[in-house]
Amino acid sequence: MIQEISQKLQYLDETYQNLAPLGNGERKTIFLARNRYTGEIVVKKYVDAAVLPVYERLKQIQYCHLERIYDYAGDTRRGIVLTEYISGMTLHAYIERNGLVGEKFALDMIRELLETLEKVHRLGIIHRDINPDNIMISNDGVLKLIDFGIARQKKREKSHDTTILGTVGYAAPEQFGFFQTDEKTDIYATGVLLNKLLTGRFPGEMLYRKEPVKSIIMQSTAMNANERFPNAASMLAALPQEHAGPMDKTFIVSWLPGFRTGKLWKNVVATIGYLLMIFYSVLSVMECSGTWQTCLLEMIAVFLYIWAAALLAANVANWDRHMIGVRKLPKAVMVVIRVFLWIFLFYYGYSLEIYVRCDLLGFPRPK
Image (cartoon, rainbow, N blue to C red; front, side):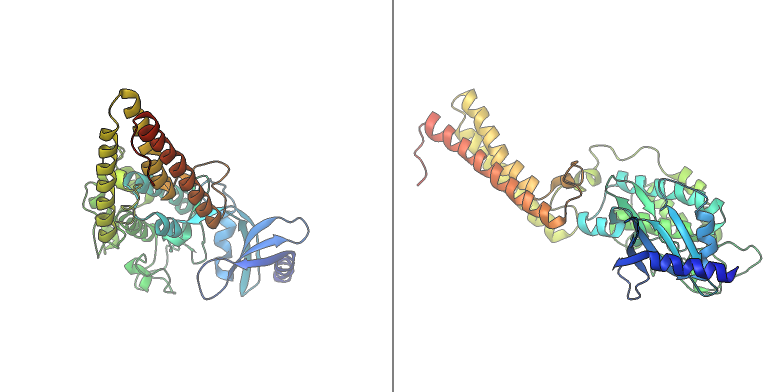
């Protein structure tokens, strides 16, 4: 049997050609791969043989928030797992790009994660490495839990784990070898992740202050595992059903350029910039308020070459990720498109202002 499995291991390794390494780790164990015969693109993972039973169980279920397991094989030492290639970015990359997210987005992500953990835990599997690098956001906005490389099956007869694994900051105290990891280990990491999404910091550095989310974070990240939520379902039930309303400050600044990262100096510069834009806009419209027609045209002109040009160029609300046809383009291409849009809107907006001021109101043309 081992020989048969080893032959399959060799077959998968030779059939699926490595194209490029994925992930940021020094040890390259995850690759984008292509089937030499069919051209199918997959993710090929070299894993420890001990984790293959986990992937065997995961292959039994298909769920929209779980990476799909295509095939696996191994010998007594190592294994290969083939999973779907998810077009998108990690949650870590999403946060790096967009800064702090609003409470609505954070709760939506955590809710989908907990629903996924419910199904995983039901199989007796503990992920043990819930962190932003192991969560993907697909191009169509779907959360995907990936990388079960250090997951384990829960063994009720054991009092502690034999291996210390996990990501610093997200690893629960029991992952340091004193007790056995269980469902509450993933609950701990989920609580840390929720706080990280809302503050950019770990709970020990800065705890989110708004209730009832604050209490949920505190309970899920309790040092004593017995004080945490007992399972994913109980934490899911504790999440507030009503999200932040449209006037909530966190909701507003989560998409406004200059406020998305939560950095003070950027907030100050952005505030000054927006105040100057408002002042100039009001002054320009007042100067052209001779008739309602010229006032309206000047408002359109100011909107185009000041507000629309600036906000679209700054990628307000990450509009490029929501437009069908362009959201899959490379980042460099999107930067060029944003610059082109800025030039287009500024030119036509400013041309309209010249028409209003000089042709309709008789102001001298600028030299």
